[in-house]
Image (cartoon, rainbow, N blue to C red; front, side, top):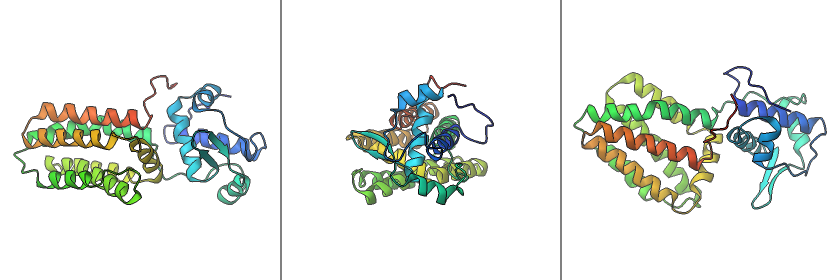
Length: 248
């Protein structure tokens, strides 16, 4: 069964999540049943794997789906009770406040490289705040520690907002504020935490942040734009949101 894209407001991952909840409510997916892998699900529904990944992560946050490391994703034993309690029993999920992570990455890729270029051109900058945030990230490199992971994520969000502040453009700061809020939503945090759990990734991402900061402080707009773009593209790959086969 294919999932059709209806409106740009209702995100594809929400449609997939609604579909899966409907399958559970109708008894076509049973409590305790193992779900197909992301690739197989994507083929069945004629959608991209990135959208399936977002939908499963959202349902995990709702505790309708549970994931067992090395085994896969399963319908929770109490999924029907959770659906009835959280959706009014009609098999449709309540409105989702989260922006989909793929949509956040897309918006960042459109805006942040240009913002970094403008910040570098607007100098000179002393870089004190950027350096402070880099130090916080450097001291929060253990992705297995929830407190450190939170400090890392907060410093990361504020770092990218600070770049907008350095442009001196209040509209860009407002856009950066909105992006920072979306990067603090539960679905983004879940996929982000999973993405940096792989050893070595925080080290590489910190190095990329340092390159962006150095380019801005040194007043090199081209380098600032390049490093910002490469950084976001890497984040998209790490979060498994890059899916060139995503149907239109």
